[in-house]
Image 1 (cartoon, rainbow over the protein chains, first blue to last red):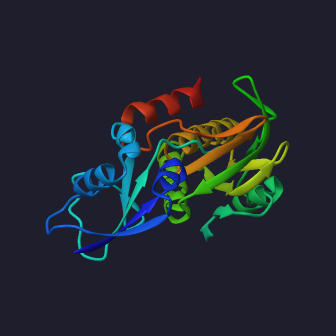
Image 2 (tube, each protein chain N blue to C red):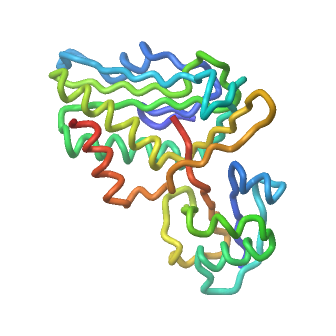
Length: 81
Length: 158
């Protein structure tokens, strides 16, 4: 299945793009998507303990199972305000 | 981008406009908070900030914060407006307006809201200072982190 990965701030810079399309196996979770991304971009790996995620524009857990066409976003530690 | 009373915008923020969105005849008070871009941070001379947001999720975060505030202070109405893009020194990066029948609730909800924005809103500041630039990375954005929510409530009610 195909998912869209959204990246922000430093993660976006590491990937060199705000959005990536990636093929994932059926049953993949947000965690699966992150692990694949961290393998592809090793500079992202140190963020593993500090990121949160969103699926289809809402906060989600890393255990969330993704569906074909989903948008999964990885959020580095935030600094709004 | 807007959702109800909340905004994520590249335009200049207007605290008075935010206050007018939330206050009506039942309100005896409206507390506004204006966050400004400061010219120094951690010993660095800041030139400007560039804000990035995941706008649709940021609006959901603001709605969630308003819902949390309404659960704690039922008569409060809240508006959260966040600027994105380049923001110059002295300009507003965030505006929060909290309206209530009485001032104590307005002040408390306003303080609670800015603490929660900093904890969970998917917004990032890219600091451009004399000699370089750096992404500021603060809190892990977990809206269900009860300890963080309690900390925000503690600051609001201290």
